[in-house]
Structure formats: structure tokens, C-alpha cells
Image (cartoon, rainbow, N blue to C red; front, side):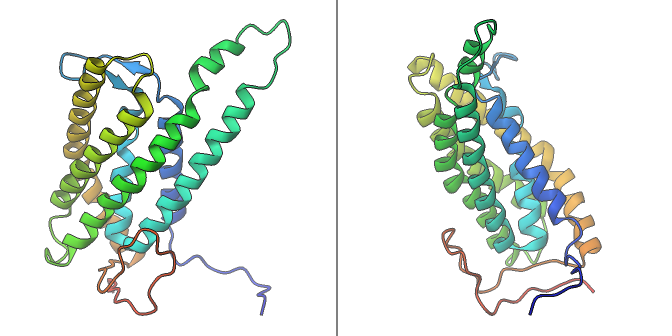
Amino acid sequence: MISKQPKVMPYKYIIPIAMAFITIDLAAVSVAYKMVYLNIIFEINSAATFIFPITYCLGDIVTEVYGYNMARTLIWYNLFLQFLFAILVTVAVHLPSPIFWSNGDAYIAVFGSILRFVIAGTIANIASNFMNIYIVSKLKIPFEGRFFWIRSILSTVVGGFVLVAIVIVVGFAGKDINVYQTWIMFKSTFSLEILYAFLLAIPAAIVAKFLKFSEKMDVYDYNIHYNPFRFKSPAKMEQPCLE
């Protein structure tokens, strides 16, 4: 039966968290081919590297508070919207421009390869993001819900390594950088991923603790199926909540 009364959302913060996750990811995609030099350690970096690791932090928080299934759903929606974003932008920048408009080539230079990057990112995200939330979820039970900051650092470092390796090989190899520069970019980008892992771990733990008490939710993923391609949640799953 169709309800004629508005329904109350069971969670207060999942929508703004999801919107932040998607916004941060699309911002990273938009500046993917902007190169950044800071110092000898962070020598060649995509500007996306300074933005994207925040999504790992949010993914860890969602997994810790709402459970693996919620995080898995968020990742899949984000990947679909990322791909849609890339298609729309690619079509838009290749539309013909009026004669007086002289910036058409600049848009193509910046966004012309965005679909390639998103395809690389999709492959990398399926591997790295699901590995990231798997580690947070899996270790929560033997750790009895403690040491979230340690689990967050470990998951971000492992997931970040996989992401950087795939994205640089598929997204950047042969595009205006040589083999040596590709290696320098890998080293610089992964170093930045590690730095973010440590910097964001404590703030993420504070936010997760706040959400647990605010949402009265602290999911433990007992007897869960970790297959990222399984879209139907198990019928029975223990999910302890804070009272």
C-alpha cells in the first residue's frame, strides 16, 4: 500500500555524508590532470590526490557506524554517478563553439580525458574502496569495536596503495609523462596517501563516535557476505545498536 504520509528517515546524517562523499569524489575527478609540485617528497602529484583520500575517511566512518552494507551501497552509487558525470562533461566540452569563443581548446585540454580517468578510477575504486571498508569492518569484531583509528590507518594505506597503482598505470601512463616520471608520481602520491591516513584517523574516530551516539547505531558485521557485487543484503544479520 502506498503511504500518503511522509516517512521519517531512520538515520539523520547518512544523506549529508553521502552527498559529501560524492562531492569530494567529483571534485577530485575534475582536477585529476592538474599536476602539483610541493617538495622533493611530494614531487609529482595529481591535484586529485589532495582531495580523494577524504573519501576513504568517510568510507571508514560509514562502515564503522552503519555497517559494510551501507558503505558498499554508497560506493556503488558513487561509481555510477562518477561515470555519469564524466559522460556529461565529455559530451559538453566537445559540443561545437561559436566563432568568437576562444576557450574551447582549453576545456578539451582540461576535461577531454576525464572519461579515461574515470574508467581507471572505477577499476581502482572497485579494488581499493572495497578493500578499505572490508578491513575496517572485518577487524572491528576481533578488536571489539576498539582502535578505530588504527583500523582506519591500516585500511587507508592498503586501499591507497591499490588505488594509486591502478590509477597511475591506467589513467596516466603515456599521457604527457615518461616512465621515470610515472614512478616518481607513484612514490609521491602514495606518500601523500600515507600522510592523509595518519592525519585523518583521529578526526574520523571523533566523528564516528559522535555519529554512533547521535544515530544510536554501532553495527558489527556478523555473518556478512563481503562480496562487493552482492547487492541483496542477507536476511539475518546481527547489528548491535547503542541504547
